[in-house]
Image: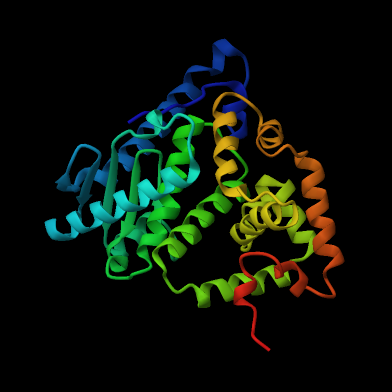
Length: 306
């Protein structure tokens, strides 16, 4: 497990440690940071101490600390591989080899999920591990969650630890969810209708926060839906039919060192700032007729029938 801590004056001062002279004060802050780092490392390791390997092949390892069975592990491994390959093919990665590293899937109880991740979390992922609560395993819709989280893993591996704004990352994950659901012929009418309603309730102010203020925007409850609409805007209003696969090019360019705005322009041929400004203006001008936002998008099918 890799654990990086930046020992600097700015790091310590942000955490309320008084910085005096180097000679007189550096040892105590360093010792404090080391202890904090060690505590965090132990806490992270504790989450996997009781994990038991239930299934392993050349790519997927399934583990659980909470009594999942080998049969459940085999079932999950197959579904994960199906979703993984779907995402891989949809994104058309130019160099998929670095993405195809081994992956651990962790099955945990609903109670443990509440302990490890506050709120009603269905699943979460890191660059090498995907955790899902066992209460979802019999839900046909769980495969959509697989596609979403595995999409995050592929994007993160492509970027090599670098980042894009959350609305773009979550918009991508949601598009993997939606695309895989459609591929399987699943019924998305309820979820899709709810997302269409959110599109119609968006305000320019909240849209601007999500698209331009990473810290505040990441806390907005509709951040993921705005991420979806950002991609739909590119596809339906900008006429970019392959808007979803081009998200992969953005991740690749970022992984090669390009800043997100440059990577976006490189992939889409559009100025990010201008596109964001146009979208915010569009939300504003359609406030009196919000149905227009949904018309022409893939969500038009979920509008109420007259």
